[in-house]
Image (cartoon, rainbow, N blue to C red; front, side, top):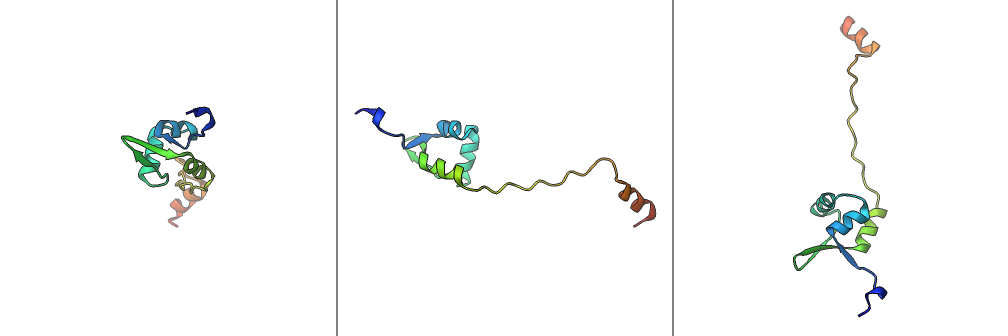
Length: 85
């Protein structure tokens, strides 16, 4: 069979990581949290290319960061602490 005429339907974790620009552990974590759907074929876990494409197109919630408190007290904090407010 001529493989040049066939598109790749599924890839392994390492190839999926390369395609997404992340490390294989990140892909494994995405599979564990069910953000990426995979299937096992024999001993190998594969992800459909269409699933990877849909994952990239999907909006992802960005975790909110806690505001970093300044080490230096601001003038307002200094006044409040001085006057007990």
